[in-house]
Length: 163
Image 1 (tube, one colour):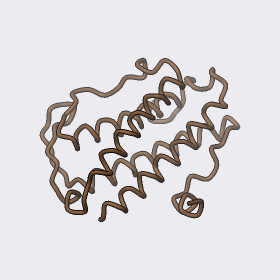
Image 2 (spheres, rainbow, N blue to C red):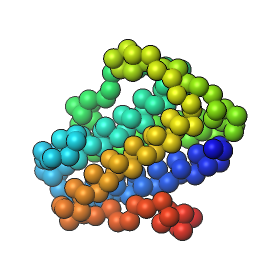
Image 3 (cartoon, helix red, strand yellow):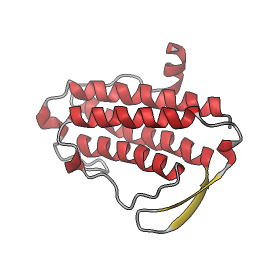
Image 4 (cartoon, rainbow, N blue to C red):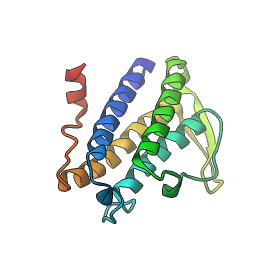
C-alpha cells in the first residue's frame, strides 16, 4: 500500500460521506432520530457512530487511546454533527499528508475502550476506517432511500470517474 493510495481512499470516503450528509439535510427532522432496525438505532445514531470511528482510529494512529466513544447526545443537531465531522476530516487529511509509504508499514499500539492492548499495521487501520464507513454509509443510504431522500450512487468507481 502506498500513501497516495490511502489518500485516494480517504478522498472517496469524504466524497461519499458528503453525499450521505447532503441527503440527510433534506430529511424532515422527525425522521432523523426515528428508531430503526439498523445497528445504531437511528440515522442519527449511525452517523454519530461513523464519525466516532473515524475520530477514535485517528487518535489511536496518533498514539492516543481514548477510553470512550462519542454519545449521540453530544450531537444535538445534524448541523453540529456536520461541523464536527469537517474538523475531523481536516485532522485526518493533515495526518495523511504527513505519511510516507514507509510510515504505512509501522505497527500501531493502542488500547481498546475497554483497556485491552492491541496492535495493527497502520495501512490496515486506515483501510479499515474507510471500509467501516462504507458499511455504515450503506445503512444510512438504505434509510435515506426508504424515506425518499436517496444519496445516489456511492460506489468508489463513480467517485473515480467524477475526478
